[in-house]
Amino acid sequence: MTRYSRDHPAGEPITDIKEDYGHVKRMNRLYNVLSKINGFIIRVNNINELLESICPIIVDDGGFKFAWIGILDKETKEIRLAALWGEGEAYIRDLKFSIQPDLPGGTSPTGTAIRENRIVSSDDIEHDARMLNWRRRALTFGFKAYAAIPISMDNEVIGAVTLYADTPFTFGKEEIRLLEEIAGDISFAMGNTAKLLKAKYTLIFDPLTGLLTREHILQELQRLIESSSQSGERLTFIVMDIDRFKSVNESIGYAKGDLLLKEIAKKLASVIKTPNMLGRISADEFAVIGCDIKDDESIYRTIENINTAFSKPLATGSEEVLITFSMGISLYPDDGSTGEELIKLAEASLSQAKKLGTNSLVTYSPAINKRLSEIIKMKNKLIKALENHEFIVYYEPKINIQTNTLSGVEALLRWQDPEEGLVRPTRFVPILEETGMILKVGQWVLKEASKQVQQWSKKGYNFKLAVNISAAQLEQDDFASMIIMEIKDTGLNPSNLELEITESLLMKNVERNIEKILQVKDYGIAVSIDDFGTGYSSLAYLKRLPINTLKIDISFIKTLPDDKETAKIIETIISLAGVFNLKTIAEGIDSQEQINFLKKAGCDEVQGYYFTKPLPAKKFEEFMANFHRDFSDPAGSKS
Image 1 (cartoon, rainbow, N blue to C red):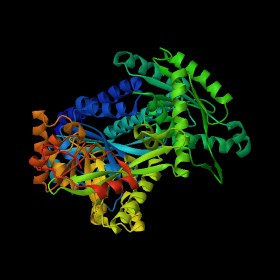
Image 2: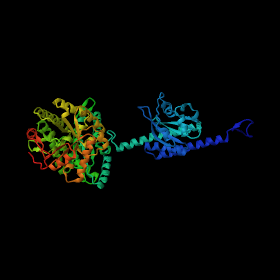
Image 3: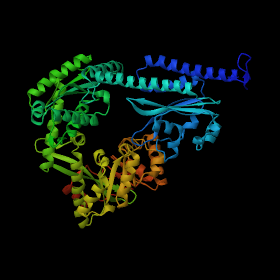
Image 4: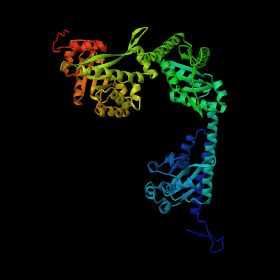
């Protein structure tokens, strides 16, 4: 409606009061948005917080129905949702936007605003051709008008704020000017916040390596100490000095020396995966915080993982440098009660370690020093043991109690130390696993046992060979091909081999492990779950696991047959195995009464000291020659 005033020349129109009021209302709302954003900018020091607060201001103070912020992914050219507010979350969640004009998402207002670095707006979505792909959806959500406003950082467009109104909203020159001002202030805030964060970052993190600075690794150590004082958890603080770094720097130049430090930091971060546990505390010194220290071996495990990571030279341009560390170690609460004390004691220990020569370590605690020295000594002896053929395979029989026959044999690793004699597996196998030596030793066991079973086969003894698989072996990408290659070399029939994998190990990365097991199964090799009942297999996974046998753990067997509750558990396991068409074997048998119970329950095989302790090949052959047993005899007299 247009009115005419007596004060104006006849026929000259003046602005309609309603239109005037609408314009003022729109401008006031946009001024409110601008004012609120500027007020917030003063306080904000986090870009995410800034982005998440802009949309509520636009909707609540600007009177809009919905607002969202999209940030450009430079590599994919897609626009990623960063923040949203209002009635329209479902509108944006499953839409894809980009800046590529040949894609539907690239012709959207948001995509166009970012690509062309200009405000794109519409007073009337229903008749806007640019909204062809989204019109019906937008109208369904009650959107009548929109504006997409590009935002920048360091003079580069990085995204856009897009807002929607539920009534026609005229974006005239003055409204566009205010939107440009809002965009400019948001862009300024983002750039300024990024600079503040960068300045703050350099205070917390070492600019060269990105690791925590000395001050902040100390703060983190103190925080963990305060937490551990309640939980009773032990902590370790390790200070590491790069051996001969001054000489390395002089040799390759300081620029390459900096590159080397960056590579060292990356390599350390690949071992110490929690960022707040790793820092650079001086030019060539790094610090590691270790948590959940259950025993002294836990400390050694961390150190060994670091040493293993640096076992190969690091490349710096055209040159390669082999890195070793001298280390000083202190523990909480054993050695000190504050972060300052632990750092001081660790650095004192480091000074002692450097006096011993390169690649040395010293802990502040004499008792732990002694224990770590023993572990290192054991590791060195094990390396020689492999070279000097000191490892032996022992064999433990598996008996089919339903047919009274020798049905299989389990290969077990032993070490005949020239100084100590036969060493218990519990003393050296964990060190083989921690150092990664178990890969070579496990390969040797498989090959040695396969050759031995082949020899027995020629003498008429035909049974299945069971070999234990370690975590390190199963984690190898080429696990299946390595197993297959070894038995091909020995000529062992795949159907005569069974791999024993513990339940907890199998379930650690179950999907990936299923793939690996399927590969060996396809070649004809059997697989059994060792220690069944002690882990956490679900029936759903048990159905999917490509296995042949469940091996009932010794912890269930030792109380048989008197423990009625355990007896029921074993009967359930055997029944469950039958449902899935799996064999069962019980380990740790030491009485005829246990055999009688298991035979009645339907267990297929057993093994244990009741028959014989594990034996070396020659004595095991004697056992086989003399083996005869009638398991129906309740008295269980041995022959």
